Length: 206
Length: 206
Length: 206
Image 1: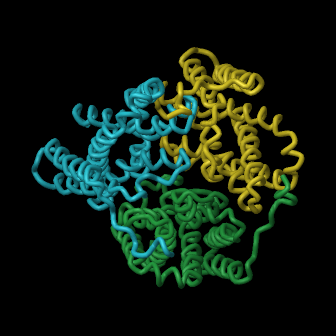
Image 2: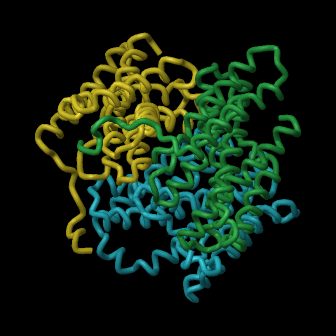
Image 3: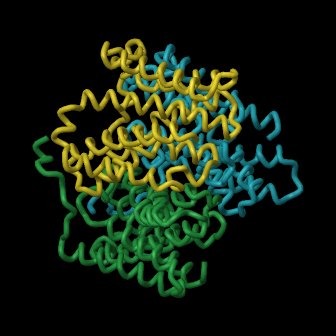
């Protein structure tokens, strides 16, 4: 991956790791629990993708920066969780940024490993939402991605844009920015407008 | 895999995906939650097996039909969950059929990848029960497979028959049918008779 | 791996499997639930490590003894859970022994597969704590490793000693014993003294 993509990747990991660490602080976990939830949230999506497409060992195990970033994010949250908790709305904006970077980077990596367009878009989505799902599983709560927020659909859309764009003659950077922009603007609109995905009719009465 | 096995595989995925989608509808999840639980329940067992035996990327990521089937099953359940919910007993019969197909297909694939007979039978069982375990984990409930129903043992038995049969001169189709028949009839009898696996003595008092 | 390491590995699997089976007995699971929790607790850490470093199929699927040991441990617990439950404090000493063996064996295997020192130490920790995390996820409880006990830190320390020692001219056996001794003594002191890892300040009030 180019230097720009790696930088964006590390920023995404940092932001996701903070969201995991905040959950751990609220569960009253000790410092190690905070670090584990920071690490699994930041790295989980990429791990899932790499294991599924056969890119082992995952990038995060071959480059020490991928391990240092979630540790730093976890320690920062451990010490300054009060401040971070108060700016959580802004954190969810950063989280949307991480989601956008991850869905594009995941889709492009899956294409690199020879997957077809449909599975590659799916792997992009998995990269984006996987970390949060692992975080919620370990924290013993139903994954946020299920709770009516529009979260996975923007990731799938951004990944799809990246997959389609990769077939054109456009430079990779343009394709990546386009995919990330679609995911980011969709997700931010969903947050600000309080959009909800449709529910089954009469399901509460089942 | 031969065309027959692929067809059976897709039928198994479809039926498992419906069982996952029904759980999602009852949790009052939105349409995306329904699709994710449909997909993980239908594909989870095969993913687990393929990752463990090193057959990456999994078949489901190399053949678009494996991705379309759970999406269709999820959407059908999303729209017609009322009807499907009422015929759930019949769904559990289809589920037994899926279990039978998966345990045999999983065991034969593991043998193909060079595993010995005992691990191959275990991988067959994992293929059969894995999807439901992932579904229950994501849904935040203790896996059904633990709750006293005879579920995993028939899968292990069917896989064992397939492994033993593969060492004979019998055609693969015969071996597959024999293994699936053992699993299916055992499982259906367990449903109809309400069989329970034995529990530890005095465990409730521990 | 040398015969000594395999023996230690099997002892660790046996002890971890008993801890999983005891949890299953207390949940009033049937005999199959007991065996599944015994197997996942005993083998889960190694599975996670092998899948992440690309060492598939995992050792446990290539050597039948790795499958027989957790089955025996599960059946022993199923029949004699009363006796084992009463000696649980001693079981947690055996568990500390398993943790020590696993963190060292995991780190050395990761180095063998070309990982750098930092990821290798992390994989050692994952090998040690992974089985218990999978057990607690399947049992529907927050992983013990989060609940304030000093558990993962000793595993990381033992793995780090093994990684550093492997770079010296010392024989592998000496390095392994040194790493395991660090983990074991740290963990036992944590149990006996009731050590707790630090918690975020004021987190209960968040």
